[in-house]
Image (cartoon, rainbow over all chains, first blue to last red; front, side, top):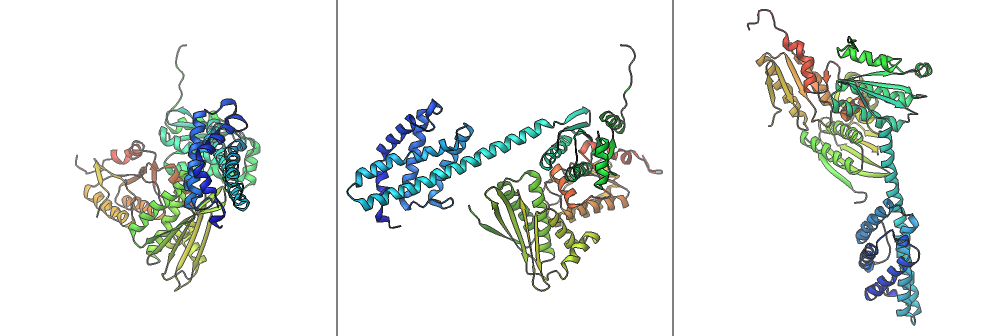
Length: 288
Length: 134
Length: 126
């Protein structure tokens, strides 16, 4: 691009104060994130000031925004942080993008005022402004998407952990009552968690109860078996309980080999076996 | 940042240890879970050892790869100019049954990776490429 | 060259692997242990791998060798403290560490070794 054909850097430098003032006022009044007072004016002012300063610097070398090269690094970081904050505050992606797009009006105005008699220069400048602000606005929506997705992913993980708690039945005996349909990913997370709890509590026996699991497919069964094998490698052992007749049939049909694992029909049978293995018995006391 | 390939020498026992540490660090940067990290570090350890012992020393190339904007992974390439492997299938089968170090290591790395590729010819050295996705 | 320290607790030898070992160090440990078992007439060997973030096929073989050699020298071996991520990876690798007994931690390991440690040989002076 012929650098002499555009006055964009000069416009930014010479009119920074006015551009900032107009931009802020349009954000605070009309559409945009500041509506309903969800963001403090002082915060918005600071963000806008910073963005303008970074943008002024970045366009010194051209307006082709790309997501990797060095001259845009600072502004990328700023937008990344901004999108992240807005995402956690629950703003919509278009509200975030409007932060950038609403800068067009004051910039166009300044360019038109300064260059009205030089139409070629004016159109080149307006065009450059459009290119760079469009690219940056779109970039914020991408960042916003990524930020929301990582929030959702984290919430999903927490949900998985909450819905499958590991319980200590007795000294050295843990129980993991699995409930609901198991998918491959959830099973892995849950099993890793069980192994960590074995170490943390110093328990040598884990009872995995699948009474609440309607179906078991090959993948889930494999995860279960791998978990049992891992526990055995670590020096602990597992007992699988709550295998209903249908699941037992599925297991046989799938050709899954459970010979290395102790299995019991009910959780209480499994608990009794676990106690026995630990050399404990339950005795009735007199009285009461 | 971007798509840079890092190259490290793998010529000694210490290099094998260093290779593990580098792979661990890059896997952490890529956001791999602890188990995923351990798997790729173990695979790297096997291949690095093979490179030193059977390949006469060589190098490890490591790079971040992207399958789509959201799917990222690590790709490792172990290359040496050693004697090469005459019969790869046999080595993989053999290592499995006889516990020969080279075959065991190759097999292990294969099981721990999502993608596994090996190029080797007698007299032309060996190149093993593994990829693990997050 | 640095070596992995071997501590003695009565008739039991304790090895705590703290560092990411290169192969040579592992082989040295095998040699050192074998010598110490004979020198101290140890009945038990406890290897603590709780600091290890990774166990590959070479390491697995080394542990197996130690267990086998100890048995020949009439000592029992227990490996303790394997991390879950390591165990999961070993299962994926298909390495079952045959002939190696494991326990969750040092206490559990010593429990397992109690029969070997309590045993007194006939003709063995007090």
